Image 1 (cartoon, rainbow, N blue to C red):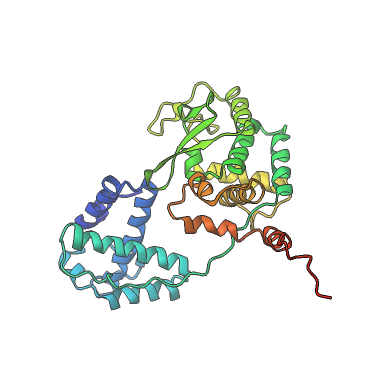
Image 2 (cartoon, one colour):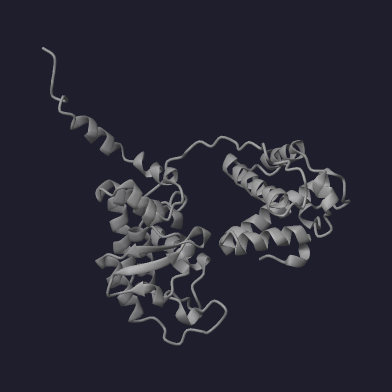
Length: 330
């Protein structure tokens, strides 16, 4: 949660710009805030502007523009080294923080002309090794659905089954699922509207399994949901407290169902169900990569292309289907 009083004015201005003009999601802006607070704390320590020994207690509200102008590319390199060595951050985490720092200094130099020199202009991003996504097989996915549907001892059985069904069929992000309102669903057209990263709206077409699971849940969904700041009365999925379901609750639901299905919860998680949906659609549905990009809400096609590398069987079949495959030299 962002507390503006704990930040210098220029940081709050940047966060407001990202939220209002760049249309970044609240989650993205929160991450910007977290990354930059750590960065400025390190700079206060690095420049010996504080006597505080506990890094997490270093205050940054008094970080001045003159201090900001002293930062060089070498200072940023020192911060990345601190992340890697002292914080044991991996390349992906470092790359994300570098991206945040780049955007931040571009705002200060190009958008607002708050400072003259951009120390992050030539900052390089560490090379990332693309990892193939972990996903459930078709058989394990069917097992997970069967286990979830048949959990007679679970008083939230219809809700939890609908959650698992949407994840496995639609490839939703966790944040997208908890944000669904009943009004976002057009049952007559079998369509669902979600707000993804960058506050971008997209349409997801619901198959029969999704429609039935949602309707079965709505038949037992509490009708006295609370009217609060989360618009719980409009939410599709509710918690035991009749409030919009939280991300943590959904994660607990998925973990519980995975355990009941005998699946490794150290290997599979809520996000892995999104990978599973994408992989199964590409493997069995003969989905065009551009259509898959649209469905998943990926900004770049390169993000979606990872699913073209996960199916070795398709690669084998492509070779076997070559018309010359049966030509054997005498």
